[in-house]
Image 1: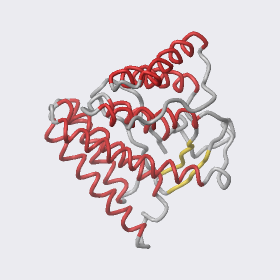
Image 2 (image 1 turned 45 degrees about the vertical axis):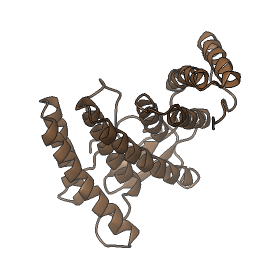
Image 3 (image 1 turned 180 degrees about the vertical axis):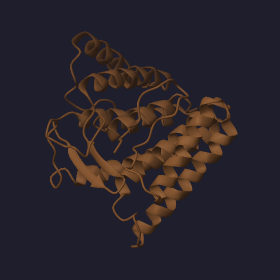
Image 4 (image 1 turned 90 degrees about the horizontal axis):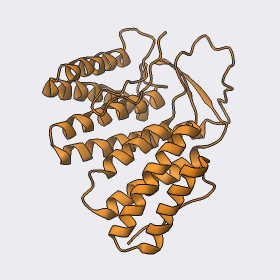
Length: 259
């Protein structure tokens, strides 16, 4: 079985999805559409790529609806991986719409991705005690790196923030990203086996936490100053600089909402 997870690539490159072990199932068909979308995108056939991603999303939606209504079939246990993969489709659609200058559609797509990532993250956190996993354990069923839904959600929020026209909306994106980054540290892993494969979920790596903390802190500093909230803006700038010097993770919540 092959397991592939989303990787950071160039701005408009497709984010990979978590693959299942095979079989002519709904999951296999969805993955075929996703791979077709990626191939179209590599050849700059944007309309074909959009169509293929929407075909994959229709399959994921039917599968998740079947699970929620107690339907039969192989959709029963695939909720977390399906949520991740559907989120990846929406995230990629957002990047395509951004490339086509369809900003409203890009924002809508990223919001869909965020919702799915949040849902999947909640499900993973609920399973931390039930399906613990220690990296390094013998595990012939799993291949590939640990999947961090925190990372997927943070990256999507930060991307959307760059296109928000209202400072308040951009601030909300970065503050949610900060909350996730502050919660993501730790030494926990969850191993979930579903018909689509075996996946290990876990927190973000400390180096990535630091990288994204600096992005959001610096953005918030500018946004706070732009809205006249100097009491929040200046400390955000100072905190970003201090963490760059120290290269250590933060210990508490930062920033406040601006009305």
